[in-house]
Image (cartoon, rainbow, N blue to C red):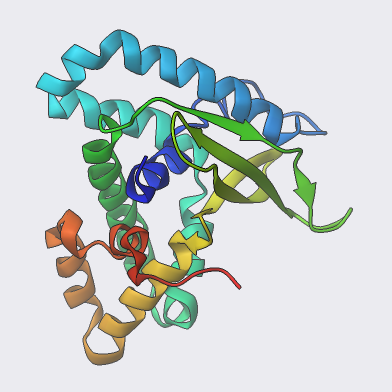
Amino acid sequence: MSLKRLFALGLLLPALWLASPAVAEPRPAHETLQEATDELLNRLEAEENQLREDKDALRELVDEQLVPLIDFEVASRWVLGRYWRDLDAEQQATFQKEFQRMLIRFYADALLEFDAWDLRYDEMRRDGPDKPFASVRAQAVPDEGKPIDVRFRLILRHGEWRIFDVSIAGVSAVKNYRSTFSQVLANNDFPTLVERMRNMDAEDDPVMKATSGEGEQEE
């Protein structure tokens, strides 16, 4: 399986993260991830023919499954880095909306390309007992070839663990988007960035390029 497909998997698989009400002590994320993986695969298999014919239905599925799992506010802050503070509240909301829409578009297009695979999770590890950050490591095991390392970065907000970054084989989505968006904002205004995000196709997407060996890896 290509790294491009695995990036889509990494963001799409935790399908039932918010299915149960928040509790004082959240369920360990790796347990929820494993259950969500199995359930989403079953749904994709059952609806594959419809989703191949109806791209709007496919994007609705991604919207339904992806959006509740990711903390787009935190992801947006990390992706823009210092440039986030230069935006007013309206611009921040606009960026978050366009970033969300861009991810839905790209990952919906990649969703039906998956080969047979297995994703095995390790236990969640918190950065510290009082820290709101944690990570879950996993291995994507294809039918043929070597396992590929996957790492979810999580933040605890409102009693739920939510994803704000995913790395595949050491390639971080946040780092690659941040590098590209920073280059745009260093030489252009904010409306130019938004316009480029709206018109960006898969070949221009920094994460898709990264999975082909052109992007930044985690240290």
